Image (cartoon, rainbow, N blue to C red; front, side, top):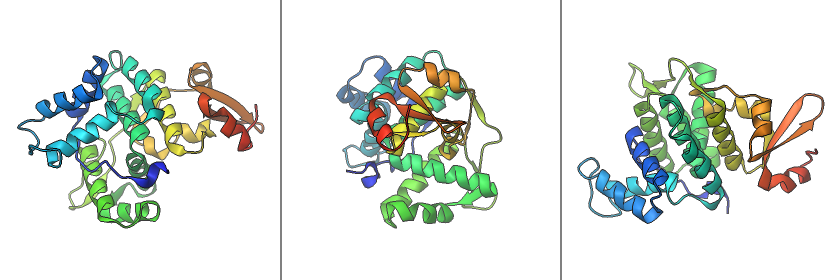
Length: 256
């Protein structure tokens, strides 16, 4: 089944909620314990008393990002946890961003479309963003709700800004600088999301889904990192793959 068959991420998520979920996971909480802790944490903040209410759905999204992650994202989560205590505030958002890319394809696609629109014209509307995504996700009401909630989340995280004209959004005033360790986590998340197993390093470093961040990362950092393999294609193109997907990459035409 394609990773892009289910939307899932349909709640506005505040940064301190992500911090709470990450801290609980780092302390060793199981997904069930994380769900219970988040349920209590959000009492009086998000309304609802059952799993089908706003609070229950918000807990489900947070738990999927940091707790009950897809099997493919277990390694990513472990490396993300290892960086939480040492990263800066800006890098902490990048760690959450990586986990959302690695667990929710709709988040990755929305972030990519936002990044492309900001680069092209400096601002965007929800209507334009929805048209961009309808081709791959279908023109469904659940997609529009996900776009609205994720964009509002990005405003809360201060990577998007409301413009004076209602419904228009602009980008951050400047990129958030991310060091090599956290930058590698972002690259790993992108490779998990692509379903292509491997991508050129230059494409990863400038990926539109990473629009809020500036990665202080180079070839040597990637070469030394555990989850990656590097291949040279042609004279000047370095191809990056996740180690567990190396056979797929070779079958796609990339060679050592």
